[in-house]
Image 1 (cartoon, rainbow, N blue to C red):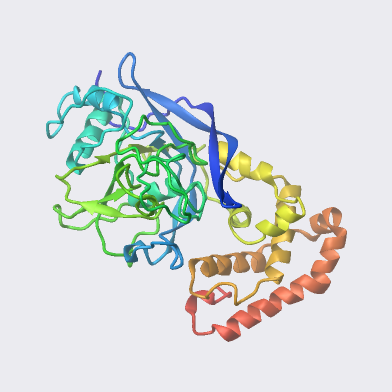
Image 2 (cartoon, rainbow, N blue to C red; image 1 turned 60 degrees about the vertical axis):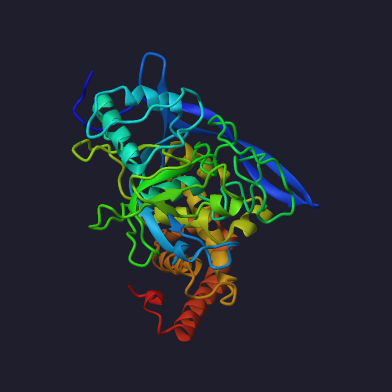
Length: 432
C-alpha cells in the first residue's frame, strides 16, 4: 500500500531500558546501570518486521568537542550551541540487514539497492546514495517523510544530555560498545576486539533510549563535509553546499575503529557513492509542518529556559551535596520531552542557581568557552527574571532574606566584574 508522504501522527508507547555510566575506581572499571523509560512507536515494514522509532525531545546542546578532550580533532570545533526547537523520531537501532532487505524489495524510486544476508546485525556496506534511496522507499511505503539525520541531530541524539566523550562517560570498552580496543581510551584496561558487527541492541542505551550510537557501524548523515564548524547552522538543520559530489558526513565509529574514533564528537567523511563499514539510522520530524493543530508544542518561555539551564550547568554539585537536586523534573523531561515543574520546584531551582552563581569563579573557565557563553545567558536570565515576592517570602523566607542581603549584591558585583574584565567581548553584554 502506498501513501503520499506526510508525517502521520504515530501511536506512542512507553518502553523501559537501562543506561550505563562507566568510571574507574581503584584501577578497575565500574559500570553502573540506571533504569529509564522513553516513548517509541513501531513502524510496520512487513507482517513480521517492524522498525522501532524513539521520540527524541527538543532541546539544545553544545556541539563539538572541547580543546581539552583527549584525541580531539581540529574539525570538531569550534564548539557552538545548537537549538533543536522541535522533537523528532530516530531509529532505536541502526538499520538491520533484515529491515534493509524488506525495504529494498519495495518499488524503486531512483536507484537499485543491494541486498544482504538477513540478520539482526546492522547494514555495513551501504553508500550514502543507497541510504537516501532507502529513506525514499520507506517514505513512499509508510506515508511518513523519513530521511537521514542532520549531523547536529545525530550528535544531539547521541549525547542525550551528556558532555563527556561518550554517553557512557569518559571511556568505553568492548564490554559496553562494539569497537576495536588495541588502543584503549582514558584507561590502560584492554578488552576483546570482536572484529565484526554485533546484533543491534546488545549494549546499554543512552538516556534517550537509543542503542549502538558508539561503534558497530558508521552512520550516514545528510550534511556535506566542512573542515570545521565555522559558519555552521545553529538550528539543527543540515549544512549543505552546492557541490553534489561533496563528501558526506559519517558519525559514531565502528567495530573496526578504536574508542577515540567512536566518540560523540568524532566526524568521518567519504564520497557519497562509496561504502565500507557504513550503515544508517533514519529519522522523521515529529511535527507535521502542514498541520494546523493548536496543541503543537509551544516555545519555551523564560522560566522553562531557566529550568533547562539549571539542569545543564553549574549548581549540580551543590544540589547533590545537599540532596536538593529535583530529579523528578529531569525524569519528567525525559519521559515527556517537555520541561514541567511545580512552582515550588521552580523556585528551588531559582534560588539554588543564584547561590551557585554568587560563588562563580572567573578563573574556572576561559571567558570564550562554550561553557562561559552558556553562563552568560544564565546570568542574563537571572538578572531579568521576575518571580513575585510573595512566592519567595512564603516558600523561602530565610533564603530570600539572605538573597536580598548577600546574594543579590554579590551577583551584581559579579556582573560588574565581568563587564570590567571582558568589556571588549560583545556577547558578555547584559543589557540586551
